[in-house]
Image (tube, rainbow, N blue to C red; front, side, top):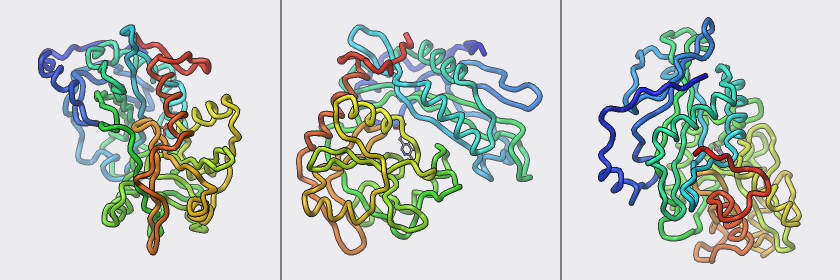
Length: 359
Ligand SMILES: *Cc1c(COP(=O)(O)O)cnc(C)c1O
């Protein structure tokens, strides 16, 4: 598909854009354009274009508003020192979006068109790719049931949109450990459910637990498996890793209810290349509590595109807590984070072939 351009005739004034890029926050400001395409059974994907960013028309009966047939992706475009702009493993996001489509009975967007939309939008709004330290242009592709129909079946009209938002480093004042609330009243996903798909419904289901976390003074939630309420799965939007005193790196294995993060896979590959022992297996919540208390687990960190790697300082549950929020970022956590960020910003050689040049 060719994404033809309909230019925004009233783009953000240059000076206003400069102000935004100086302090972009996260997901607050959006660029002047968005990419769009529509799918119907008769025509497949069509009406591909880059159009002015703005409100979209939707019938109140649009199926997504009732039955949540929706998926999304999240990735970033990075500005390198020579001015070039790159994406980190965008093909992997495109592949994951296809897998999510299959689970949510949405049409598959070919990876080539997924990449085409990213290239077309970034080319149009390249002045929005920030140059500051650990800043980037966050890209949010998403797809939803736009058909106006209240019957329950996969929609016969679907929209794909890609919007972009300049973002600052998640950690404005340096990397800082977070506290995690262990959710035992709620689970995020169960076997056979949608946990492995990146869909809005999973996030909606995590919000009550997130409120519980805040009420208990924590910033993030950790979910356990739905059956035994015993095995560590992941946070609401990040995967989790444990660093053992003997140097092993452990992360919960993919069971079908965990989202396969691209940051997670990249860390596994980086760690193997560094010669670290890596284990993907089930992790008992007791192993986490006791491991941190005894010192057998030296470091815990969460990972995802938005914050890259976030050290976990403390785990809190109904009746206790373990860990230390004031501890400095662990040595292995810091090293892996730096290795990843250096590849993304072009400061280290991309030996894995992860970076794709957009401009
Ligand atoms: C997106 C997401 C992640 C992290 O995936 P990345 O590809 O590393 O950004 C982890 N867990 C959930 C539930 C997610 O939606």
